[in-house]
Length: 507
Image (cartoon, rainbow, N blue to C red):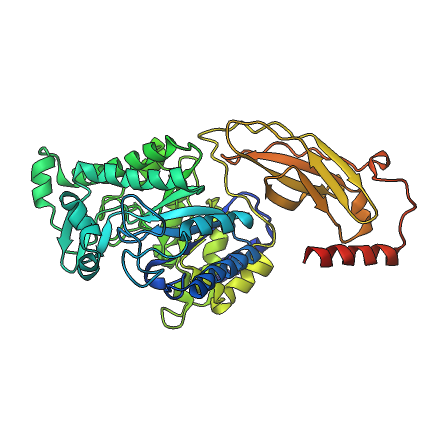
């Protein structure tokens, strides 16, 4: 009885108590699934009108992400050896036009990157590694299909094809794919999915490959090394282009059996040769988003294990919010709330949601809860301090103001990486800085405060490099001598009229 009471109390605290915390550095991510038109686009098209509809669908969804407080989107760029961008290696996926290999009227990945960045969202290219298309799709693709182009890398497994991690050239091929994306698109990260051997249900037979390349190694160790070789090759390839691009992956949600809890045969390291914690330790992976699509004893001990073995890098539980749906497991909202509050209490790197549709559909009120309680304060993604921990120089801020607005301007900060700028307002000495704008690329900002008193508050501009290092917040006050003119201040009614004119002009 006492144990049950304590469990109820703990559950209530986790579900309610942590929501007031303001977290400035955590991932708030979502998987945007292109495969089979699950999240976006909702349907294929070959017309200009349909193309505009696809674009608008994405913009609407990104606006919803921003309104909910998210900061990162995994946009599916490579599905099953088919892609969502113009590639020299692989054909177009059918999600956009309805025909495998047929190009859409625009570049979906380029459009997604641009629209994410407009809204201050990070855009990570989601790359599905080893699965290839099904046999019927390969036939439709003909000479463009990977099994035709590179048969030595592929294995047929029933009605689908898989890449073989044991073939050394597989690592080089995947590295070339990821390098192509980083060279041609301003993505913030490469996010690997299915970077593992297939589950037992898939008839994958690598006996011949093992005989050819195994060199009498233990087969379990050999397989694990094969996957690690692929990760290492991808890491080297993308860092050679832009070292600050984050490399992450979505491993199985349980790394391995624990001394205190069994994984019941389904884990990353032993079951599918995915040595994800070792990748963090050796530095070839910047972050993990383990697929923790379960609850109770299957979730909490393994969440603690991920944090205990993070090696100073973000581990972000991927939450199976699709289980909230009544056609799935019909979880109550409290299940996800407890899991999310626990990620903060454990000190994990944030939260990620699978998948976008179930978030924007507001399953069980999750979207509303994020917007009004859990993500009420903005957050930036954690900086890559293991790669670079030196912040850019402090921008020199100049402020002038007129009757209704502040004009902030600063000089460009030089750095080895691209730099963007954040604007803060500091209302008092004991008040935390309030973020007004972030990820600005220009060198000026006009701010129309809602209250006249904010014309006389303190402000600061910071510089942030591509690794996420931010310069210090140094408050500057709009001194009377910095005003645009010496006119008498407006009355309240006059000021309100001017503010309305400005806002209408912005619209």
